[in-house]
Amino acid sequence: MIRTEHLFKSFDGRVVLNDISVEFDQGKTNLIIGQSGSGKTVLLKCLVGLHQIDSGSIYYDDTLFSALNFRELKQIRRDIGMIFQGGALLDSSTVEENVRLPLDLFTNQSAKEKRDRVDFCLDRVNLENANKLYPAELSGGMIKRVAIARAIVMNPKYLFCDEPNSGLDPMTSIVIDNLIKEITEEYSITTIINTHDMNSVLEIGEKIMYIHDGKKWWEGTKHDILHADNKELNEFVFASAMAKRAREVVDHGSARS
Amino acid sequence: MQFFDFIGRYFILMSKVFSRPEKRKIYRSRIMFEMEALGLNSIGIAAIISVFMGAVVTLQMSINLESPFIPRYLIGYATRETMILEFSSTVVALILAGKVGSNIASEIGTMRITEQIDALEIMGVNSASYLILPKIVATVLFFPFLTILSILIGTAGGYLIAIFTGVMNPSDYVEGLMYSFKTFSIWYSLIKMAFYALLITSISGFYGYFAKGNSLEVGRSSTKAVVVSSVMILIFDLILTQLLLIA
Ligand SMILES: Nc1ncnc2c1ncn2[C@@H]1O[C@H](COP(=O)(O)OP(=O)(O)OP(=O)(O)O)[C@@H](O)[C@H]1O
Ligand SMILES: [Mg+2]
Image: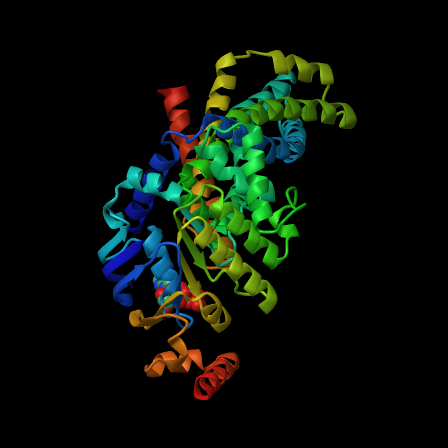
C-alpha cells in the first residue's frame, strides 16, 4: 500500500501538484489518469523520491517514505521497480546486462543464479533470444518488455509504470497491460500506472485516480468511470470513440436486463 | 553568484562521485571499459598532433636560430624541453578536452534526458559514482601514458624532419635530446597530465549530469564542458607550474 497526504509540489512558483491525498492498494493495478501536462509524471516521480516534495507526506505501508534519509532511501529502493516513459534502458549495455545490473550490484548470487533469474524474467515478459541485443536494436514494444523485466528482477514490492504502453499498437498495449496486471497479482505488488489510454483504463483499471490541473478530481474503478458524474472526467473519458461505444454497450446491456 | 552556485554543485557532485562504491568488481570492469573507450581510443589523435608538433618545433627552431653563436644541438634540446614541459601535457590535454570532454558530457547528458540516470537512482545505485568515477579513474591512470607517448613521438617527429628536410644534422639533434636531462621534468609533466585528466573528466561529467531538457541542451552542455575544461587546464597549468617548478 502506498498513501499520500496533502502532497504539494511546485516548480518555480508554479503549482503542479495541489493537495493530493490518495491511497494505492497492494496487489492491484492502480491507475493515475489525466491529460497531458496534468502532473502524472511529476506525481509518480514524487512518489519514488526523484522529485523533492514541497509539503505533505508519502507512506510506503507503515514507513514514512518522505522522511527517509539518503541511506534509508537507497535501501527501500531495492524494493521498488520502475518502468519509465521511454524505457530508460542503458544504451551501452545489452538486454541481458540491463536486466542483470541490479543483481550484479546488490546481490552475491553466482553467475549461474543470475543467468537463471535474468532468463526467468525475460521469459516472463515473453522475450526470448534477445539477450545479446543492444537497446538500439529493439522495437518499442521490446524495450518496454525489457524495462518490465528489469523492474521485476529484484522481486519488487512496489512497481511504478509511467505510460507503459505509450507508442505501442493496441494489441501490444493490451499484452503489456495484462502482463503488468498478472505480475501484480502473482507477487502481490503495489502497482501504480500512469496512463492516458482509455483502453488500459477499461482493461486493468482496478482503482483509478483522475488528476486534473494537479488536483485529485475523481477516484473510482473501471466499472464506475463510464457513469461518473464529473464534467472534466467525462470530457477526458469520452474524447475516445471507443469509450463512447463502451458506454453504449453497457447501457444497452443494463437496459435489457 | 552563479559562479559560487556552480562551484557548490560541482563539489557536492564530487562528494557523491567519490563516496564508497557499491561493488568493487563492477567498478573494476567498468574502469577497464573506460580505459579502452577514453584512453586507447585517444592514442591516434595524440600521436598525430605530437609528431607534427615535434616536427614543426624543430623546423622553426632550425630556421630561426641560424647563428654561429648558438650550437646546433640546442635545437634538439629545445624540442625535447618544449614537448616535455608544455606540449605533451598541456596541449595534448587541450585536445583531449575537446575529444574526451565532449564525449563524456554528451553521453552522460543523453543518459540524463532519457531518464537512464533516474532509472539507476531508482534501483538504488549511486548514479554519479557509477557513471563518473570509472571515467575519472580510467583517465587519470591512462592519460599520463599518452603524455609519455607524446614525448616519444614528438621528439621522433623532430628527428624525422631533420632527416627528410636536412635543416639540421640528425646527430646534432640526438645529441641535443640527451643534453642536460632532468628526470623531474618528466614527473612534472605526468603530474600535470593526471591533474588535467581529473579536471576534464569531472567537469565534463558535471555538465552531462546536470543537463536538462532536450538534445539541444545536451549539445550546449557538451560545448560548455569543453570550454570550461580548457580554461581550467590553462589556469591549472599556471598554478601547477608555480607549485612544482618555482616554489
Ligand atoms: N522538471 C520540471 N521543471 C519544471 N516544470 C516541470 C518539470 N517537470 C514537469 N514540469 C511541469 O509540470 C507539469 C506536469 O508535467 P507532467 O510531466 O507531470 O505531465 P504528465 O501528466 O506526465 O503529461 P504527459 O501525459 O504528457 O506525460 C507540466 O506543466 C510541466 O511543464
Ligand atoms: Mg508523463
